[in-house]
Image (cartoon, rainbow, N blue to C red; front, side, top):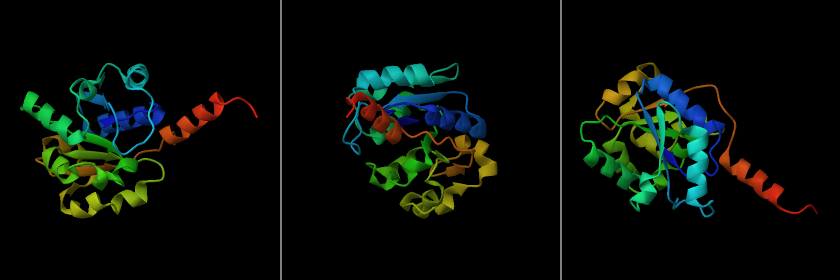
Amino acid sequence: MGGSFDPPHSGHAHVIEAARRALGLDRIWVFVAGGNPLKKTQTAFVDRFGAAHRRLSGRRTAVSGLEAQLGLRYTIDLLKRLRRSAPAARFVWIMGADNLRDFHKWRSWREIARLVPIAVIARPGANPQAGLSRFARMFAADRLPEDAAQMLKNRKPPAWVYITTPLDRTCSTELRAIMMANALPPV
């Protein structure tokens, strides 16, 4: 799972746990992006990484700054590097449904779908749109039913599943707005 994590919050932790349960994953790596080409403002990497490490790491979840350490900017480059480094590993890319709406804007998004299976976890405000996304339409024949989610990690890509789960309504955009509003002097 990757992202800006600006800031990391309970919604991210919820996606991690929902994916772990639904997919039966041994370990989840959280990759904090050095930068996000689709976002204009971000907190410094060192601060986002530290906050993500404190908020999201656990016994079976490791928070990594590998993308920034390697000077990578795009998910496709990170995934290719991981596949070369661990060719026997079975990777699954985890994303919230809010990211699926704009997945077609990611560099080499089709190649990502053909490189690793993808688990999409329900997020507030995105559920109906996620099924109508360019990705969902293009890879409709590769979608597994939710009750087969545990099989995803053993499927050859392209393969994906949409996981419905109770929603955590926490949102980074709203948290940043609150943080900025509180940083301003009172009017």
